[in-house]
Image 1 (tube, one colour):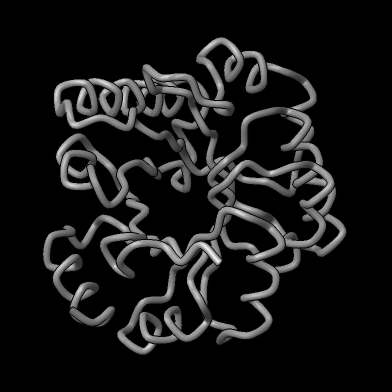
Image 2 (spheres, rainbow, N blue to C red):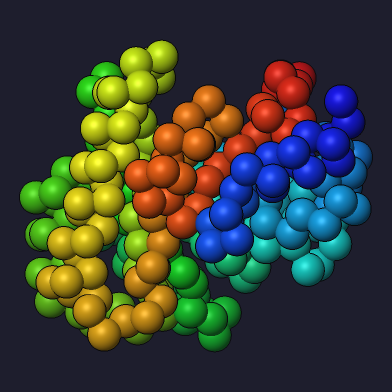
Length: 223
């Protein structure tokens, strides 16, 4: 099926209150344009260099999300235009985003990435690390970032019970953060979880944003 057909079928399975981020990493500009011409406006990339290259070649009304691990020395390249950074996993990174956002007279929306998988992954906050950040005076001083919610990746497994349990953990984190730190912040509303293989489960468990690539484009183009 075509990219347009795939998108149409996926959107039929996603409630209106859930945002679809089409993961375009490794995909050529032409394929992204096919999705764009089908009405898709939110795209996510994992690598800064690939994101900045595509941003210059594609329509300006695209909302670009950064999904992958972000090094502090790369923030400056996306700060002028990025719509949402999903992968904030340290106070150091938040401070750098705040600095670059101020430089461009912007407020940059961010999600706190939590480590929820049972398998080893490189990145993501523990609950204790998140508490340390949010309770710090340094965090309070940041004026050009907005924490809009949380992000997490479930284990790569066919065990639905495991996936569901890990998504429940992320929702629990979101609810606790909302109650404790963001009760009066209407913008704190996003739970980014679920990919091509598990997004229906993520939606059932409370996702407000799903990140889907393979189901839209087919297997990735590793050039």
